[in-house]
Image 1 (tube, rainbow, N blue to C red):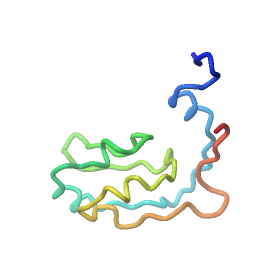
Image 2: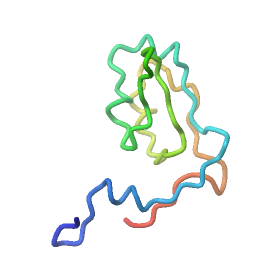
Image 3: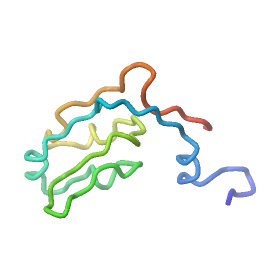
Amino acid sequence: MSDPAGWLPVRDLLGIDVFDVDEEAHIAIDPAICATCTTKPCLLVCPAQLYALGPDGEMTFDHAGCLECGTCRVVCAAGGIVRWRYPRGTYGVAYRRG
């Protein structure tokens, strides 16, 4: 449901984005380094909620829905994100509104 000003909720806006997913991940994490992180801010700040803890407590990341905002890279003080770059040309997110 949109509000009277015509704004859509964030979840609806994200739903109209288009992703051309590359098989090669543009972000890589080191689960062993992530295991040493006590605060795990990436779980909280990723707007697409792509970071998760597996059943064994190991950090996982799914690059397929990445919004390429870089927030995870900024908050990762432990160094668990060992590679962050934009996807190769023609791959990644295409915003459809706003």
